[in-house]
Every structure is written in structure tokens, then in C-alpha cells.
Length: 249
Image (cartoon, rainbow, N blue to C red; front, side, top):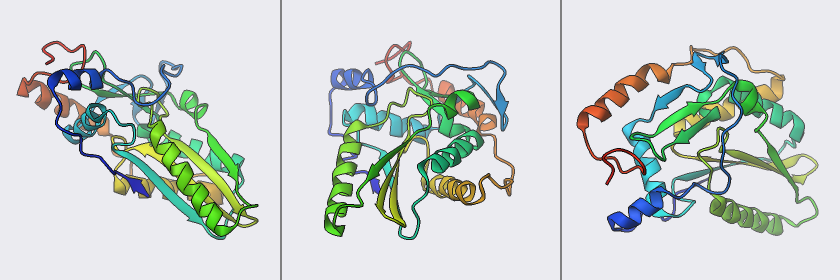
């Protein structure tokens, strides 16, 4: 399930936009401890990667709207014949987080001319991966559906603290002895529809096999594309809409 309701911000004055851009995404601040020299899949700990213009637009749209659910994705996976162990599921997500650097990347924009992804070390990010659990087995099917809708509504209002390396979260609700539902909440600036499918395939491959299979294709280094993105953005010489940046509006 992807919730992009009210995703289009209303027309706002420049002063309103400035104020919105200074607001954090959801609760929580701070960065995870980093281990200099950590390197996995071609990305070093603390490395900064420029956002694409589309990512910048998604980031700006969320901040300017002032509503935490704008551009927030909620992927709901109904497991009608499975009730995975939460500890095993957490390990699977940790493995996938280690494979895909974007899942352990903070989005930094305040006080910068251009927003960037900052990649955290594998170990530091793994410690932040959590699986929230809920038990709805004692409820009737209609009440379980209502509880899920209530959770999704409350989850949307939390938003995502993009300045943290692991800003996404996972919830697993037990519906019966062999039934459950998983909700993965992540900001659209980090993943697109194709990426979501890749991540979920890896999660269930790790969960079933106990380990991730070898990648079928090399992981493309987005950091190789990043300098070109940043260079083009600088050449445009447009005033920045991000707070604290030189030349900002």
C-alpha cells in the first residue's frame, strides 16, 4: 500500500516554504556512530552522495507541505500462510540493509547548498534495524482489518526522520498461527517502485534461506553517477531552497 494522499502541497509564500524546510521529518534527530574506513558494495561509511533532481523534488515536496505523510510509502505485505519469527525477520532486514547502501543512508539538507545521502557503516546501521511486533490473533477478521487501518493512519502521522541513517521501519502483526501482515514504511526519496520489489525479494530470500543469495548482477554504484548530478546542479546556478545555504531564497 502506498499512501500519497494530499501529496500535492498548497501554494505557499516564500516565508512559509523557508519555515517548512527547517522542520525535521518526524521525531528524532542525530546520526549513528560511524566507523571510518568501513566499506561495503563500493560505498564507504560517511560517504556523501548527491540526490537526483527527482529525489530533490520529493524531498522539497515533503518539507514544503508540512505534512509528514506526503511522499511516504507504506508497503503492506499480507502473509496468508506464514508467521515468520520476528527475530529471524529482523536478521533478514539487517542483511538486506547491508546489501543496499540506500537503506542505511541519511538524507542531509539543512544548512547545505544541495541535499545529499550520507551512507552509514554496515554495523552501525544494523543496530538500528528494528521489527515492531503486534499480536492481533484474538480479534475477529473485521476487527483485524480495522486495527490495520488504524495502525496505518497512526504510522503515516509519524513520518520518517530522514536525517537518521535508518529512517524506515517494519511492523509485523500476527493474525493467526500461520497468518501475519508486514508493513514496511519508507520515504519515497529513498526507493521507487522497482526498488521496493528488489528489497522485498531479498528480504524473503534471506528469511527462507537464512542468508542472502549471491547477487545475480553487480550492484550498480550510484556514487559513480552522483558527481555528475551535483555538477549539473551547480552549473544551473539556481538559488537554493534549502535552509542555511549560500544564495538561498
